[in-house]
Image 1 (cartoon, rainbow, N blue to C red):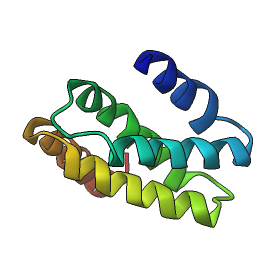
Image 2 (image 1 turned 30 degrees about the vertical axis):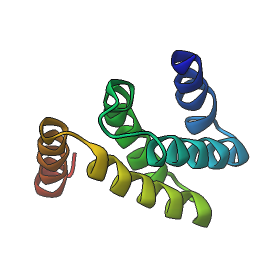
Image 3 (image 1 turned 45 degrees about the vertical axis):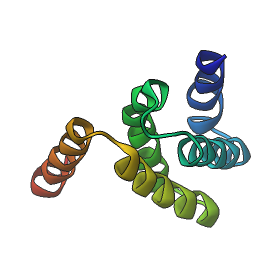
Length: 102
């Protein structure tokens, strides 16, 4: 089910201490977002946690080139597929980070 897949992605892979698992999770998450219709309620529900995950992967120490590239692509897809409300939240969060370093 979708809940099991997203749980495995977020809980097991993306935030793993092992680079190989983070790499796999990042690739799977990008693929899931890329190939799911943006009108899907299931997709809209995971975009905010995916945004957080990709942001975390971009800022991780000892970043892997592939992970950085895929996380960057993932952030772009998240914004592209987000509804207007989520887009506004993402922009507000980015502005907060840029202005206050949070």
